[in-house]
Length: 185
Image (tube, rainbow, N blue to C red; front, top):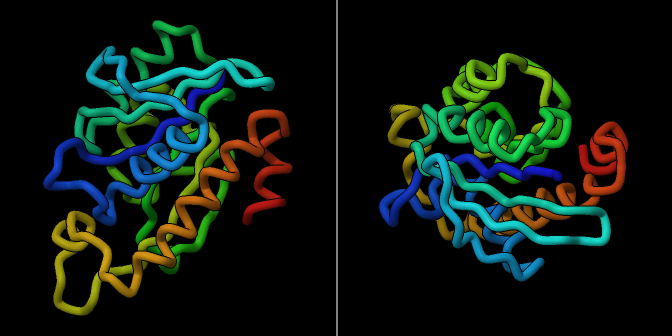
C-alpha cells in the first residue's frame, strides 16, 4: 500500500494557510479520486482507495504540524507500510511561492513537522514533495507568516502548485520516485 501524507494543522483557524499546503494537496487528490477522509486512527484522518496501481491511503495527521510523526509512525506500523512507500507533502520557506522540489531524503531543514517524522520513523530517507511558500515579508515573524492565509494574488499560483503536487503523487504510484523527481522538479 502507498501512503500519501499531507502535513498541516487541523481546524478552521488553519485552513488554507501557508503551513497547510499538504492538507490542501490531499484535498485535491481526495476530490480527484473520489476518496472521503472519513476514517480516524492514531489522531489522523484518512481514506483509502483501490486504484489500478494498488491500494493508496491519503492521510492528514491531526496532531498539529510539530508532532506529525506521532500520527504517521503508528499508522505506518499498524498498516505495515514501508518507508519507501510514503510521500510527504509540506511547505518550504526557502522555495519561491508555488515552486515544487521533490527529494528522496534529506534533513529537516528547520521544518518541525519533518523533524518529528524523522524522529518517529528513525530515518530521513523518505519521499517528499516540498511546496514553496517563500519567506515572510521584512518585519513579520516566521510563526505568524506560516499561520497566515495566502493573499488573493498568490492563490492562483498556489492552487496550481497543489494540482502539480497532486499530479506528482499520482505519477509516483507506478513510477520510481527518481522518475517523478525528473518529471516534476
